[in-house]
Image (cartoon, rainbow, N blue to C red):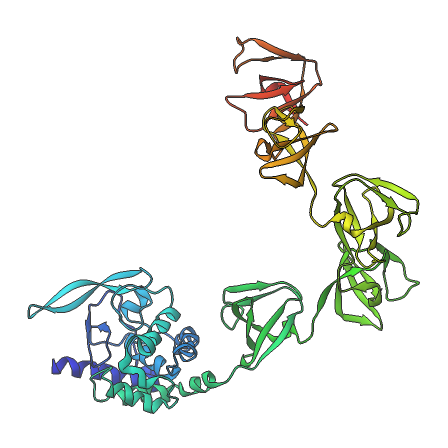
Length: 536
């Protein structure tokens, strides 16, 4: 055992030397060398063969591990320099078999989020040294392995609690040795040597920097990267004008850490502005966008009253700004827009007379049917009366209390022939029968339990809403020729109805079975092959 410890102590020294003299290293041959627990190196399992498998490029190794090592300080207060030095020693610069096969930098047994890999390991069983296959944690990335190692030191093992928050890498290296992380008497010096020969202590200083968060806004749609650099995957795409938080102390080669809606990524600072870039506004009245920032320039597009527009806030020429509406960008003074909604849809609670002025004794402009949607100018309040416009362009006034901001009447379709009742009770009289599939207007404010007031062809009655569907029951088709409808889905069944060429036929949705569809024609149900019909 003393010989094994000496061998692994030598490995640590050689890896440390490689940090100073990388030209001494040579790549190991491919294969799956057995691993064995070696407390001289650490608590994990490491390659048995007395050879050094070194990462092809220190720069590549650092680029793949730096973010995870620094995150370990932010999350667990374990020094990045220590984490990185341990990763170098325990993974052979990322070239150990477990690292290559399972992103397992520290030779940790078990599973990670249910993922593991079987790997040959030498164990002592009943006093005998034998080779067995054991499960080792398989990580999705090196970052995950580094994070798990930080948790191992900072959370899972109280024996290492003295490391948490300590900022002196030399002290932490000595503490790790004192705490029994590794039995090699030179372990602390090995860590310190790796740290100093690679200037890893500079990573600590980066981690200690307190974030300097500031609000910015995207100049245009931008895709944050998962790490610094264009060749990294996209973390999240941010729409134009949205607000983000940027840590101004996080700059690396011009790239900054950006936070957006719970997501974090990296991007160059020139893709953002420190003041809002766009805002949504509403036209106070009908206005004309101009081609230039002058009244005598040509008109590009008319913007309706209340229409929502996008204003480019950093494009002003005096009081004029670039304004986007309906795919057109033009100019208009900012004073013609409101930050708040100007118009809003309302619905007539009952039939009501639209007045020419904000008084009951003014003339009637138009009758508004129950449930009709109107557009209300919500800036126009005159003692409770508001100006509104009907669907057919009539403008007048009505008290807002006669309107609802929610739909009052909806169109439903009868799932079967159903009798509307005079009161919300089955014992009441029948008012009218609604044929299957026909549309009726349901007053959705009037329910008494499951019963609703329903209007069909001018007749109003009551019925439980379950007998209707919000989705249309039929599709309209045209008869390709004069045809007979059958009582069943076969030609030798009886004829139940006939139609002329060009007649409109209602086909029940999803009724096609072997090419035959169920139809409704003049109140009669029947069947016909769909090939005899053409959908409108």
